Length: 202
Image (tube, rainbow, N blue to C red; front, side, top):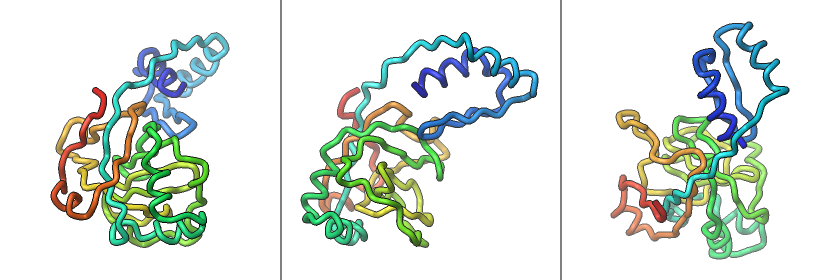
């Protein structure tokens, strides 16, 4: 639905918009003029969207879930009354859909987390989340592209480079693409540091 709205807005209202920002369930529009905003509001009663097929791309993302890379995995597994291995298995089973990028440039917001793993954000955020951390917050899982504060529960880290401002586009994935996490060990993590992601399906 969001992708259909975005395509419609860019095609029909692009010249009237200063910015169009995609969220998890919303789209925020910044208009160049009040007249354009009013004209758009009036047009909504007759709006007909063409639903777009979702992307077939699946990006394979290696993740090291060992304790030095996922500081919250053990405690979260305890809360869920399961082993760390069982939690990792649940986290690597789904194909996640990229909904949007936000919070930080290139921060992946992913939908598809097993309901068993849904966990409220931390009541006290961490002052330092390592770059490329894979984490859970609420009903979502995500990937931090750079070191920052954060309130999500850290499960592991990927050796991939997630955001490069010198590249065009700076993020290799797109909204609508899918992500498949694959568990790796610390030796593989260090060997693969900075590699580009692999397309499981083109």
